[in-house]
Amino acid sequence: MGTAAVVAKKIMQLSKAEIAKRRLDEDGNLERFCSDCEEWWPADREFFYRQSRRGGRAPLHTYCIACYLERVKGYRLKRKQLAAAI
Image (cartoon, rainbow, N blue to C red; front, side, top):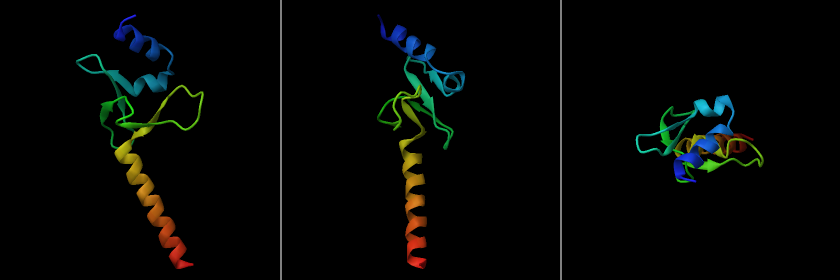
């Protein structure tokens, strides 16, 4: 089975909402849409973290790694400020 067939099979297993967040680029590589920065990135572990829950249909997180780290950084800063205020 060729790589295009493998990609097509993976896409067929996704929900309609997940299909809307994925596309093939000009070279036939699968891309994923980041819900935060609203940009398309290659759908691999270099740009997206894996989902923490097992058995889900979407193996990759909805935010790219850069956006995810920005959110975590903001959350940690808020917690630090809250702890200093107490």
